[in-house]
Amino acid sequence: MTRIGEHGRVWRFAALALLLLAFVGPWAMERINVPAEYECSAPFVRLRGDYCGLPLSGVAMISAIVEELAGRAGALAAGDATRVALRDTFPMILSTIPAVLPFVIAVLSVFRGESHRKQLFRLVVWGSAVAWSLWWLAVSVSVSPPFRVWGVLLYAGLACAALTLEALALASRRRSGKAW
Image 1 (cartoon, helix red, strand yellow):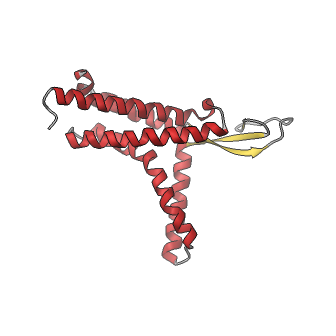
Image 2 (cartoon, helix red, strand yellow; image 1 turned 90 degrees about the vertical axis):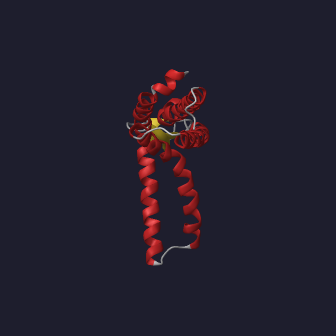
Image 3 (cartoon, helix red, strand yellow; image 1 turned 120 degrees about the horizontal axis):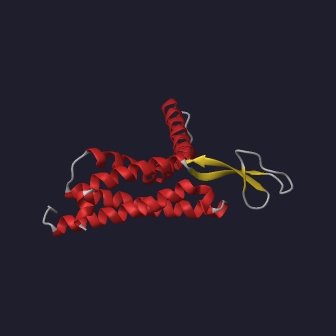
């Protein structure tokens, strides 16, 4: 178990590389109605029933959310924002944070030193990423088969693995007397 703590930088770098791959992969499908007798042409893929889907990567989804938030901030600054648009902004921000924060934490973990507080914070971040990704995976799978959204599937598996490794690293650090 102490080897996990000793090689923390290595497996955190691997987690960062896999996070990049997960964000490039498809997280959702933009659905369009195409009757079953017609073929879906690339890049669209056949989903269930009369629907085809365009794979949307995690990067595309996050950039669309950031673009939408920037537009709302501009409307707010110009005084054109409606109460309904502002009411929907906060949940949009909260739903994006668990997806992006593990990436930021992974980058910082590779280049920064260790401390007990940082490890506890990483546990919380990866724990929220696990909960969020499992929720997102359930939503995505309800629309398309799981292998079609392999990016979020990889993200969910990686979040579970990273949470486990961080917990084991913290436990090994405690056993060796370096916890505080």
